[in-house]
Length: 319
Length: 290
Image (cartoon, each protein chain N blue to C red):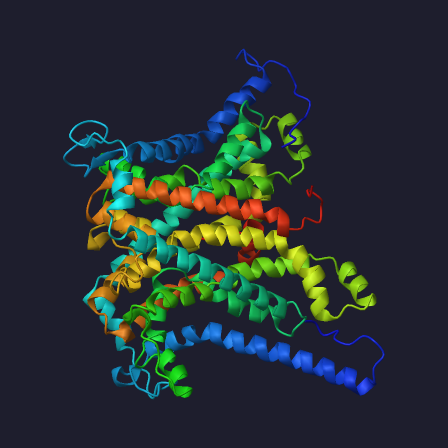
């Protein structure tokens, strides 16, 4: 941000503005597209969402303010969500389970692959591409491919389980296996994190590892005492971003199971989507969005606050 | 976990044996994982060209006995998939163009110009990245519906043409690394701010523009949620929406679903292989995807 150069304070001929003033005005002009975006689509929208959560509206028959009669309870949307919404706790549990199981698993898997690829293996580039490819194709196409892979009667799942003499789980066709099925899909997308870990691994200074080896540490010890601590900033970053993304899981559950069977895969965003865009309770849905926002914020803060216990910054920053 | 398993003085043969064992284990594990990761792709392509009787065969036919392309034809006749592709290409290209033009200009202002409030505004912009999309989803929907923009591509494109905070951030970080002497030299030669942007900084920023273009391409090509909300007429659908319709209407026609998944993935893979370096660099630099 150090754009300090000597400012020629000469007046632009005939315009009455110094060059610095021209620059100041033009700076805002160039930034104008995003200024509009920021005011309307970010700040405006966030405040509007908060305000809207105290109203009820289907956008056609006007806005009903919750603080005014007949409701007389400003927090009626929130009250209903926490006390009467039949699917709220189910959605929250599913989303939390999905996040707290798939994020650690995906982190471990991505780390494992990155470590394997970092062992100077032949064809590292090709393997890297193969592992990254699934992460490229997110969304509906992936969901549909997994629908077939996990088909319990003639999918790959059936083949694998039959091989061990077992019966394949019903995955998206059964209540208890549908959510694990979604977790499995998320593991397939571990490639992005893998790339980040690989980049992180390659920037770990080799002198430290060599020094440890000379001191007699074996490979496992070197990994857990040197390499892994040096990777913790990357791990922290991935865990936080994955957690935020996982809490907003929508596409796969919407496309594959639409929250079923028997609400086994209903998630927070799916609930929000139904309330807003299928039942047209936009005020109520805004209150769901705010609750989701607060949960994500608190979780991110908890992970972040915990980080000074387990994240090691080589450059300092440690108190 | 590396090849240097046994450094201390041990009999030569044991040391070599340990090494070979470790290397072998690493390769076996890598290959097994790679097979698991790529298998769904193989299964997808193979199922898309199988005759219908073999798609649901158990034990499965890995390689189809004959190659049948009917799965690739039926979705295009049952649903207007050609139109879905036209819509997706349009939204993707316009979205990319918009986000690259606007974000590079804003990033230029952040990186190369001095204006009051710049740094505070930059921090505020970064703060918006922390807010989940779903908080702003409903208000922006209300906003666009009041403008009567539902069932147009505008709600998908306007946020791009006004600059994406993430891409502005990415570009700004890169532009900060270009020496300021460039600007001074150009300014002394009488170059205006816009020309400095378009003739000097943009050409020097190609690598980051490439990263942003690819990021934006995959985002729009795979986008599902916003199109789902804003586009309610079949003739406006994008490919992911079309595939969701295919899945709900022809839920037993796995051949057609796999064929359409294959077709939709191919452009992304082509772009990926053409610009692999940018892709990986982009992921590593930004650390964020989708």
